[in-house]
Length: 160
Ligand SMILES: [Zn+2]
Image (cartoon, rainbow, N blue to C red; front, side, top):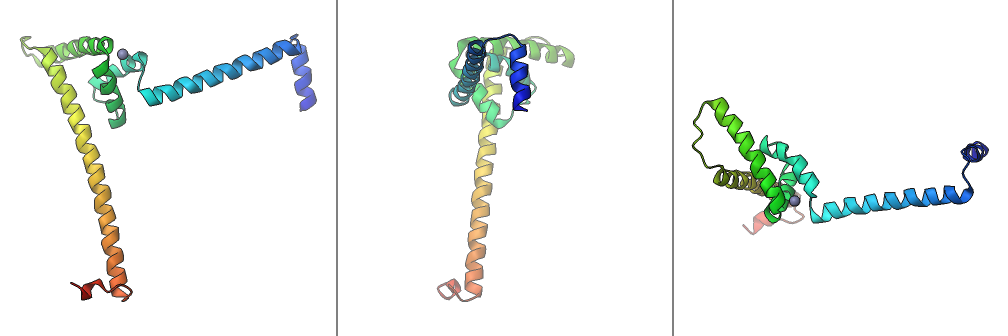
């Protein structure tokens, strides 16, 4: 295996220094890519990510986490907000035409409402998750208290 590798490397006509540089370069690229990924995770989405997500926002296809990151970026980025506004108008215009409604509508407030509605839904979802977790925890707690009481280890019913 090792011999085969050495032979293959010799055959490509590069000097060891060139091979070393190549390895270094690809290592650097790898590290930069990892860094960019990490940064995008920490600081939210890039303009490109957000633009690519707009169709999925409009068809309501983003996960809660994606939606939060998306709206966070949109709120602080004029450029992407305008892009979203344009796409939103195009999308809604098509829907309005399909539904046979007249074109007398103001879309900007509607976009704001749409964003608020979606954000609200995410908040409700998160609250439900928290509620479910605390309900599950209380159930576990009550159950263990009941078990302890039943076996007389911690007879709480005596104090009630
Ligand atoms: Zn942007």
